[in-house]
View 1 (cartoon, helix red, strand yellow):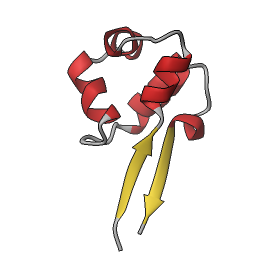
View 2 (cartoon, rainbow, N blue to C red; view 1 turned 90 degrees about the vertical axis):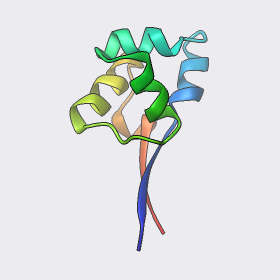
View 3 (cartoon, rainbow, N blue to C red; view 1 turned 120 degrees about the vertical axis):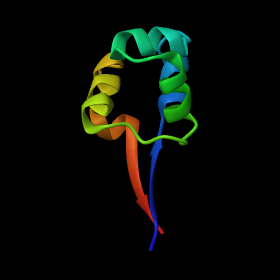
View 4 (cartoon, rainbow, N blue to C red; view 1 turned 180 degrees about the horizontal axis):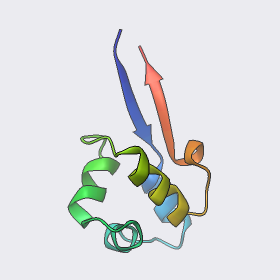
Length: 70
């Protein structure tokens, strides 16, 4: 049985006035490349970073990230 973490970052960035990946990266204290990889589901963030990203959107963690199993 596999699992993966999906996210709503792209949609939330758009809803936040078309926030750029660089803007989100600055708010979360990481690089734009890190945000790009997380958004593309190529990299799962640490729990701390996941909370920082959710905080940047002023949303609960579960509005931003989802844990899915097969």
